[in-house]
Image 1 (spheres, rainbow, N blue to C red):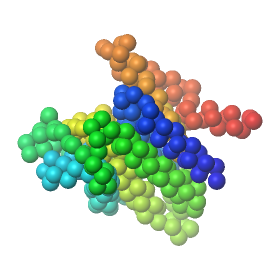
Image 2 (cartoon, rainbow, N blue to C red):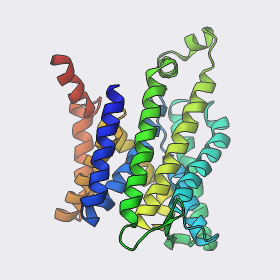
Image 3 (cartoon, rainbow, N blue to C red):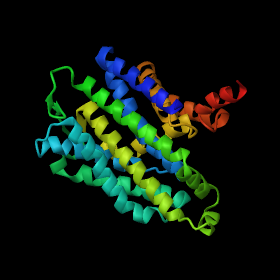
Length: 309
């Protein structure tokens, strides 16, 4: 019930933001939602004790899948683009997960990074996909309804809000039940899970598939926000941003990825405006402070306050 109330409040707030906020804030909110959804999937994976440094692979696949519909097949419906981005990433995760679900620790992290960099190299070398420049995409309808000039991003934000809220509720239900406890058990002692008759491989595979699909959805949403895709979506620094946000927020709540994504975007915007030459250093110092003083993430502050109340 609390989750449903929180979801309703979040959806109402985002709808109000989409209808009344200036365009720059709508744009930033879309990026926050896009990255928050990706990190939400990363949170599911981290519950099994695994960290993927290659979520940029699925983020890029989602973005390019949405853009290709517009650029090559002239399908300009934003809803179709979002579905295509999530579906393309889920299909890729279903294939690669067969291999990656058998690895753990640094091997899993480095293999996921390797696949992401393979996609980056293919995109850079592919003239048909715009090479290093990428290409633009245009979404002129949503569920068949034509969008008026200037309203596109506001509609996309409302659509992204619905997607993010539904995804968060589903993940909350998943992790709050037996599957969530099984995922944590795989992280704590994989051998005992096997003795109990469960398959750690199957748990990791399913969570990897969920993380991939959510990353693809986030990539498609980011592509709609920017109106352009390029190989940077699959580069290792993009994957690093997602891990940064996950560490910043922590894994205790489904709200943590979105809160951390908002803080990350605000911090990067302010740092790049007032210290354009050293803004990366500002992010690095923030990461250092979190690891030293709040290793469980910013959401641990809310947990401490709730326990003391």
